[in-house]
Length: 418
Image 1 (cartoon, rainbow, N blue to C red):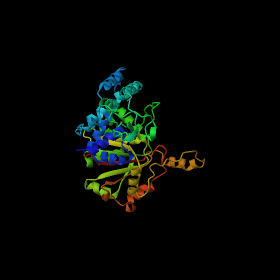
Image 2 (tube, rainbow, N blue to C red):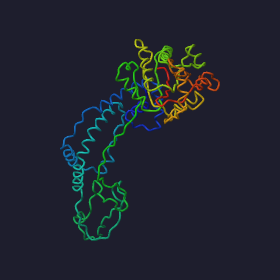
Image 3 (cartoon, helix red, strand yellow):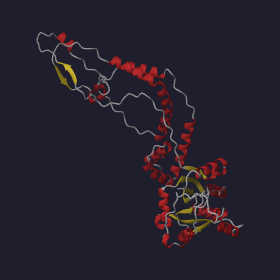
Image 4 (tube, helix red, strand yellow):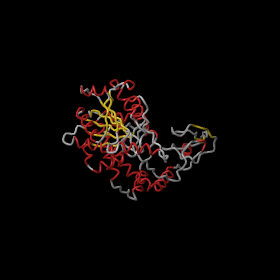
């Protein structure tokens, strides 16, 4: 069961409002919880439906009616504000609030830009009506008293009442100024008061393109549209991490080895990992390859979906661009920096460079090019083999060649779905 913090983290990722510091926590949550993956997919679908919904403009006279009702309300005094009862803090369910907020933003933003000028004029009219009438006070010296309003820091000059006993009570009542229910408007910049300058021009909202992780049910790769989306995703970045969530780990690993062999991948199983696979230890596994193209990676996942069509051991695939985190993990696993983001150099080759290639191609004619990959223990980290003493890892690194221009390095992790 997801807690409130985890749900808010997923909602922030859908809205594109989480900070870069929360990215690692969000990815770790998706990697460890199938429930989080399902919820993230549902919210993505709801957000897409909201964006595709028809938007209707607010009625033209709406702003006038709202401002008329505001003008008719009685002014609030300072005592009314201080005696107001606080609203009970409730924690509503976050999902309906998110949906309601999205709808309110769509309608409110449209009506705001259409009625901004009318609202300013109406607000100025209301302020003019609240200005006090000029007070005819008796001649006297002035004294300075604090302003009655808490938000007004400037002193207010009040006429001093005459002390003569000949002054009647009626004259005293006429000359005494009345306390206003709201502070008097002050010009911008007066007496060093800091205020915001008037907004003269309205800037439109800026559109920001967000790159969200690609999640897909493995069974959905039987559809051509989903296969095209996966291929388009794999050509957007230089390297990727692919998490395969499995319901049956032993059978999922067996299926992966079968499909890898069928598509021409020379999969080397590290000795320690091979021993633990034979014992069916409850571990997670990682496969690293840097010679497959985006099309070959897509074909690998499609074949996995076809092999387990009747009783699919894999649940979902989570495809995300590789980051510095993946580079550090591969460096710990292999003992060397794989250079995930290093692009191969392209340019004209010298004439002599083609001779050795032509001889090699003639010798390897009829044989498929080798596509090396290595399978190792991923989690827990204490069960990993030591790269410095692993013969299989050393052999894999020795077979590495210069990376081709269209190759997409991939870190494929097979882990339990629950």
